[in-house]
Image (cartoon, rainbow, N blue to C red; front, side):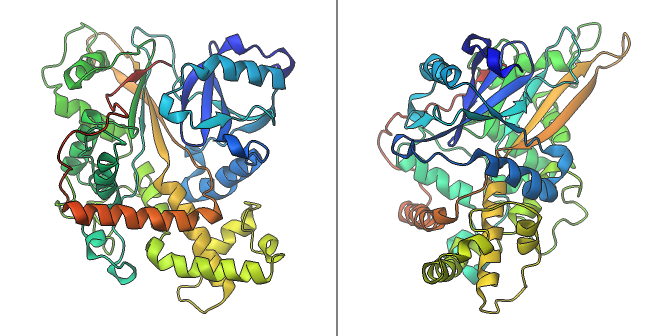
Length: 437
């Protein structure tokens, strides 16, 4: 990539999340990730190198280096960034425009385009890429929570009620992370099925040249070319269940709501659990670094906060804002099992929580390419799995996390788990889209 010859017309809008916007090159399998922030914070943009260090030095060690693409920081011409911002603005969803793209630092992350895998060779069937944001896959210990409901209903399912009640989504998703992380094929099938039916921002399909909005039957129609034999006849055994089951296989699975038996973390993974080398297993193990729940963690956060008020220079030694290096990783890995009252223990638990929150908010990208072996033989698949969205969670976000947790639980208990009556404000449509690559 010749940085001095950058042209905004060579890049197109690819998508965005809460903290960054992504553009992809129209010819080469590369993307640029540019950070976003509230307009009032434009003079103090986030440090992009911290994101790379956190991903490559911390999350890579916990989740597996082969699944992580940390990227590299590049310095872009400011005029290119400004023109790019103007070009993509009209393509951004209205509800994402509360934050602006960083057009002042010129810094961006250059990454491989995971929706256009390098393993792809030209065939009659374009590559298919599935992105899943699985969320938290376990229930907290009753020892640290004030409301018993938190040990029976998962955070995601309670949050759905809160989001519908506040007009975030029109309908509630029946997807439950406990199903996806259960290691039970039937429950995992239900999880993927519900993600397809109500994807919200937890399930995306990237298919070359397609920008349709299909329902379930239309989705299956688009997927059928991946299950064709060389004679172009669909295998009679390929059903909706078989297609979803194939998704599970490529996610590294072995094998609906929270009223199903929850994952028993005391016996996990067990003989019927997730394979220990699978993507889902690694994500779940990292999520479970949160041993205290936000309620049990908050007093330790307050202890650290008070210590930093008394001794401001300790922020550097305790690595509150990094650097995210081997020493940071060692702090959270060697945390004592019991609270000894020290600030070092409190900091280690806060760091563990922040890492766990990143794992709870990450995404899995599975790229699937069909390879034809010989005539009259079923097609084979090449695939790659990656984990992305691995930014560090800010230290000072913990009070906000506690307030949100309290609002979610209060809303769920107030409504008795029932959806609000009457019309819901139409804010976000959660129809499944085929996102163009």
